Image 1 (tube, rainbow, N blue to C red):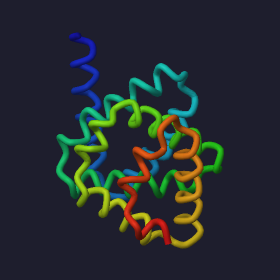
Image 2 (cartoon, rainbow, N blue to C red; image 1 turned 30 degrees about the vertical axis):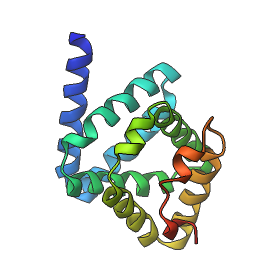
Image 3 (cartoon, rainbow, N blue to C red; image 1 turned 135 degrees about the vertical axis):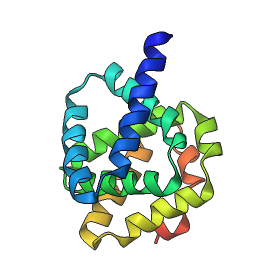
Image 4 (cartoon, helix red, strand yellow; image 1 turned 90 degrees about the vertical axis):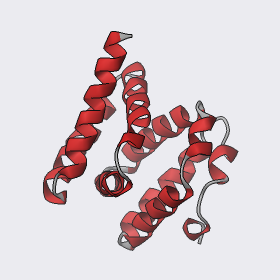
Length: 154
C-alpha cells in the first residue's frame, strides 16, 4: 500500500511538472517516455496507465490539455504500429474501469477533440485511424463509441 501511494504521488508530481513546461521542452520528454513505454512489459504498462488515470484529475484542465496536446503530437510522429500499441493498452485499461468513462467530463472530451481536429490533416487522420482501429480491438468498443464527439466522426 505504501509503495502504491508513493508511486501515485510520484506520477502526480511528474504530470504536474510536465504540464507546466513549455511545449518545446515538454514534447521531447513525452516522446522519450512514449518510446520507453513501448519497451515495458504488460504489467509495467498497466501500472503506468493506472497511475496516470488515478492522477490526471488532480491537475487543472488547462494543464492536462497541454499534456494531452503534446502527447498526441508526439504520438502522431510515431509509426502506426507503435501508436496502435499505446492506444490499445490505454483503451484496454480504461475499458476495465467503465466508471472512469462515465465520470469523464464532456468538456474535457470536447476539448481533446478540438485539439485533435486542429492538427494538420496527416497527423489528425493518422491518430484517428489508429484510435478507431484499437477501439475495435478491445472487448467492449461501445464504451468508447458513446463518448466520441461527432466532430471526430466526420
